[in-house]
Amino acid sequence: MADLTDTPERWPVVSAAERFRGRIFSVRTDGVQMPDGAVAARDTVVHPGAVAVLALDGQDRVLLVHQYRHPVGRLLWELPAGLRDVDGEPPLATAQRELAEETGWRAGTWQTLADCLTSPGMTSERIRIFLARDVSEIPAGERHFTAVHEEAGIELAWIPLGDAVAKVLGGDIHNQTAAVGILAAYAAREDGFAGLRDPRAPES
Image 1 (cartoon, helix red, strand yellow):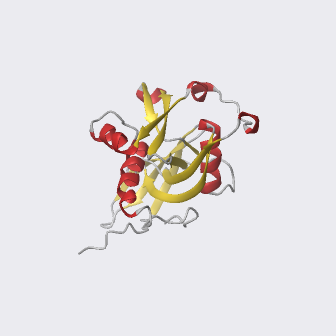
Image 2 (cartoon, rainbow, N blue to C red):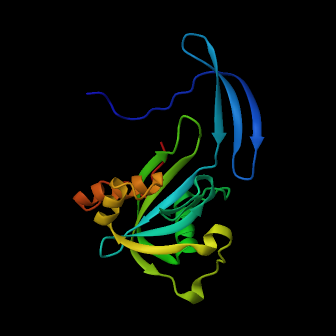
Image 3 (cartoon, rainbow, N blue to C red):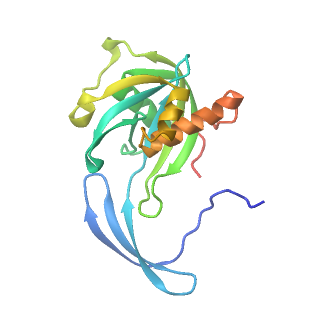
């Protein structure tokens, strides 16, 4: 059987030109040398990466957020998530902060659920999805974040994990990170989440 482990590989880049630089990401065209010696132009969306949190309560319900996403023109059900745009902040700390800021909830138990390359044919973006359990609502007096823009209208919902799986398979939940997280959590529950990695596990 083949070793089904993704491995680092870097083909030679003979040229690079930045095409666009925005608030969050940039776009670069690389001249990549193929194994046969030919050079092919490859556009890359350079992205800082993100984290997402699958929060699971004592009744095996998943916390989802309903948020407007302009590029696709939809209100999507998603996992709480955020950019890794704070220099030096570990992914776990980013996840804990995003869960608190977006939902007003926190967790006592954290594990690494999955690592995803969101669209590896076009972007460097990678997302670490955490499983958060032993959750509790943060008292109003301890919340120090004011939501703005799309986040100001976020709606929260707790949905049984099995129902969330059915929503993914039925085509009702489209967000890729939510789909991966929900299906991964459903599979990981089989052994009581014993097979999951430490929340500070290195990123491969």
